[in-house]
Image (tube, rainbow over all chains, first blue to last red):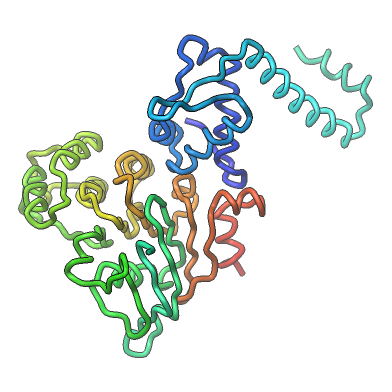
Length: 117
Length: 231
C-alpha cells in the first residue's frame, strides 16, 4: 500500500500513483478501473476521496465513466506517452530548480549525473 | 433535512462543563473524526447522540426528531468499555444482537469475524484485549444504522490490530451511514476521514474537510491538532 504524506491532499497522491501504473502499462490489457469502493479499499482511503480521484482523472481526460458500467481508461494511443512525458518534465523541473538552489550550473549538474551509475 | 443537527448543545455534570453550546450538522455518507484530548467532551457528545443521556440545554435532532427509542434504532454506538456478555460464544453474540436490532445483519457479522480472524466457537471471556476490540467493532459495523459511532476503537491495541480495524471500517461500513470515530491517534485515522472535528474543553475549536485542509493550508490533521492544542 501507498505510504501517504498526510500534509498533501490524499486524492493527488493516489492520482500520481494511478498515472504511474498507467505509464507502466497496468491497464493496457484491461482498461476498466476498479469501482470507487474497490479503489477506496485498495488504497485505504475514504470512498469520497476515491470518487474525487476518478472525477479529477476524468477532468484531465485520462479516464471516462459509463453510467452503471464503470470507469475506463481513455482510448488514446498517445495517452501513456503523454503522461510519461508530463511526469518526467515535472520531476526534471523540480530536480533542476532544487539543484540550481544549491548553486549548481547546468554543466555541473550534467557532470553530477554522469558520476552516478 | 440534516441527518444530525445540534444547536447550542450543552451538557453540565454537577459543576463541570462537559459540552458548551455545540452547533454541529452531520451528513450521511461521510466519515467524521472526533478529535481532542481526554476530557474534551468526545464521549459526552456520542452519548447524547445515542440517547444515553440528556442534554442540560440546547437541542439535538436526528432526522428532525429528538433522540428517543425511535432514533436509537438508527444509531449504532460502540462505547469504550466492554459491553458484550462474557459468557456468550462469538457465534451466539450475532443471534443476540439480531434480536435487539432490526438492522443487525447476521451475515455481515459472520463475515467480519472471518475477516478479522476471530474464532466463532470460543467465549467472549477467552478473548485477548485486541480480539475483544475487534469483536466490538464487528458487532457495531454489522448494523445498517444511519449513524455509526465508534468511541476510541484504536485504544490499547497493537499496531497490526489497529491496521486491521481501520481497514475493516473502510471496507465494511454501511455506505449510507455517517460514521463518527473518536481517537487521539490522529495520524492513524487521517487517511480515512472526510471531516475533522477538534474538541477542546467542551467546545468545537476547529471543524473542516481534511482534503481542503491539506490543499489550502498544506498541513495534515495531525499538524492542525498540534497547532490547536500545542503550547
